[in-house]
Image (cartoon, rainbow, N blue to C red):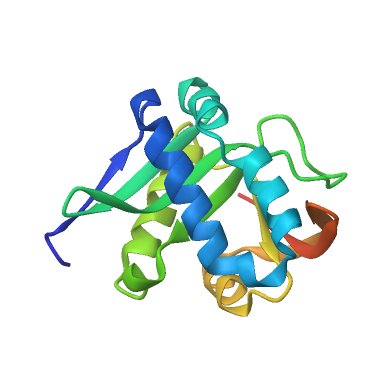
Length: 173
């Protein structure tokens, strides 16, 4: 592995960095799908620094940053499951985000971010884990499938006025 990269748990001091990175990775990955006003409304709601700080300070959530030469290029976030599925139970965990900037993909670092998040989610033992993934993100679906996640349902994910079809994936202990 390239020694320019480091993986570390984010702290509240990383709120601005996480806000900028989450915005950039979402726009890079999905921005072309939405009218500009809908995309901006979503970004303003989902990724402001103040919201990231709340997540980073909350003991039930964890975020990891992947840095290349000290610059954040990827992140993963995990916490209690908030997906709208009738079988979600208290104590279930969710991989909430897993993104890398395009120039840093396919080097194995996404898998390392993923493993760090899963290890944290299962730090007290195996439990049911959930992931929401865009219905047309076939690469992510294959990746999660290789790690034992199976489709358990669907829901609509709002981005402004647009509603994306999302799959709910689950892995049971």
